[in-house]
Length: 81
Image 1 (cartoon, rainbow, N blue to C red):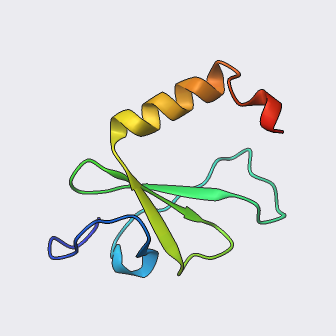
Image 2: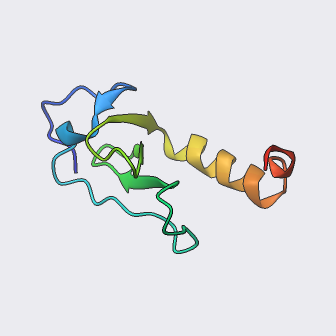
């Protein structure tokens, strides 16, 4: 989980999210084109590029992640592939 003294802003270095339990989907391939998610202590969810684990992290609310996942499940982004 993120340290309490860390201000959570988009673009924050993923290295500053000390103790974050990063994970990626079991559907992710071995080509490295994946994102990883980590729940944070304040209820937010962090997202980072698995190819750049020390790079920036994006911070979302649980509601934002839930809406995004629901849209994916409903096929709203199928035309992007």
